[in-house]
Image 1: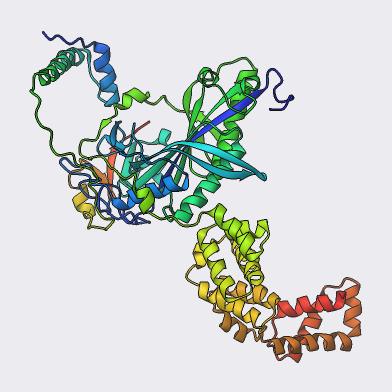
Image 2: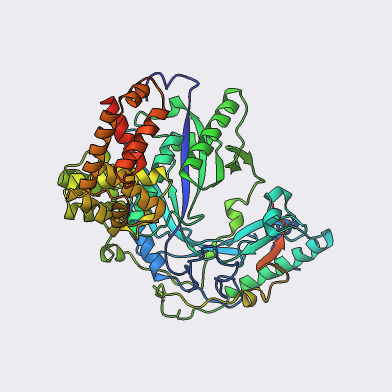
Amino acid sequence: MTAQAAETGDLVAVIGLEVHVQLETATKIFCGCSTDVGDDEPNTHTCPVCLGLPGALPVPNEGAVEAAVKVGKAIDAEIPEETTFHRKNYYYPDLPKNFQITQYDAPICQDGELEFNVDGTRRSVDIRRAHLEEDPGSIKHVREGTEGLESRTVSIERADYTLIDYNRAGTPLMEIVTEPDFREPGEVRKFLEKLEEVLEYLGVFDPGRDGSLRIDANLSMVPAEDVDDDGAIPESVLEDANRTEVKNISSHKGAEKALAFEKSRQKKLVESGRAVEQETRHFNETHGNTVSMRSKEAEKDYRYFREADLPPLQVADWKERIAIPELPDARRERFEAEYGLSDEAASKLTSTKQVADFFEDVAEEFDPDLAATWVADNLLGELNYRDMQITDIDDRFDEVMRLVELVAEDEITAKNARETVLRAMLDEGKTPDAVVEEADLGKTSGDEVAAAVTEAVDENPGAVEDYHDGDDNAINFLVGQVMQKTGGSADPGDVNQLLREELEG
Amino acid sequence: MSDSAVEPEDVRHVASLARVDLDDEEVDRFVEQFADILDYFETLDEVPEVDSETDLANVMRDDEVRDSLDQDEALRNAPESEEGFFKGPKVS
């Protein structure tokens, strides 16, 4: 704590998170219904168990339990000898049984931590617990009327009734609860990015799935002078500060935005001598603000009790049995050491497991520097420009590999490879060889084009002069000349570029 | 008359958690009934110790997809439905 920040009257934000992530399993947590719901018709992935019909018996999915143990290993948590399930009772249409099966006093993961970087500084946040539970169904709030359902779907306040789809009900969820170790909304965002990266590496999480990540965040403001020198905040100080819980956050960016709003809202209240109400608030993504929600049940109102239909799980020894892949931090360090990559390149290449795996496949065949340039700069750069993800082309890695091969074997120029071939591959779905052939990009042809460019410049001093005088039509004339000389086989864009280089050079 | 003390406030609170609207007369009736139910639990104290069943643990199933119900079957017991959805009350 710097002397300046500790001045009397300064306030520090204290933030803790509850992160709900959907675990990527084939079936739901307590029944055999498929979780691969996508845009399927409502209520086509249900059975007596996930509809909560009387007498149905839940049976835990071993895949979901394994995924939870993997998460526990990755965050260095303790897996207790015995872990149990509880019923959390509340009445809401998305919950067909009027209770949610969750974990209470014996969660599957306890006392973990996660390290991440904030502006080059290493931070570690303690994870109090991570437990398994079932996802509720999804609700549409609907207004009466004769128009289609889509146009009658409205906000909760304006609705006349609800429509419920239980396809999602019973999807395995892991709720990851951190200690209130965050001080800045920006840190929360970095933490969530890292958490998602780790979960993806473990193969237990699909960020592309709608609603796969949901965050509740609590925030309070405490006097800066109450913060200990090591940054810790005494229990009594935390208890004295009223905190708000912000719900309905569904992205990293949303979390940062919601908490920044909440921080300044509370700061203003405290500074103007008013009290912060201890309450639940709803984040409105569109407006970027938080609004008070009608107070929900207190903890005791959930009337937690043991789920008698589910015997305890004893899976502490699974921690030894189940292997997890190399995690992003370890892999980044290995990439730097093994391939001599910069920190920046290694970070980009380990951002997702798929990217890292693909890079290693390419680096095995070709020069690692070339592989790094191609995967980190060219491929990720062009994908990013198109708002595409690596997952959008993961069935075409062999084509990208072939493209790198063409460059490695000097068959085409690096510039053509990226600017013509890769772009045509992404925009038009063509194979690299097809693009090379169509655009006649073989190096000889490249030489012919270059020769034609030089000729066109030499033969048309008038146009060259016009170009230098700022007449943009002159370049079009010259492009036409080159196209004629090459029988139309050259790429006009490339010719334009080459001409400008020739004229400027 | 029962031995357990149940206040009308307790009944109202439990009713509100269950989203059930009770009038005063019903509250009075449930005060009586709640107390009786709690008394029944005391009867359990008189049950003699018996050997418990073998402790079960790790009852799990493989992560393999099984057939789900058809939409029609799923909605069969719903009092109301619309376009394949269950229809429920407005919520806050």
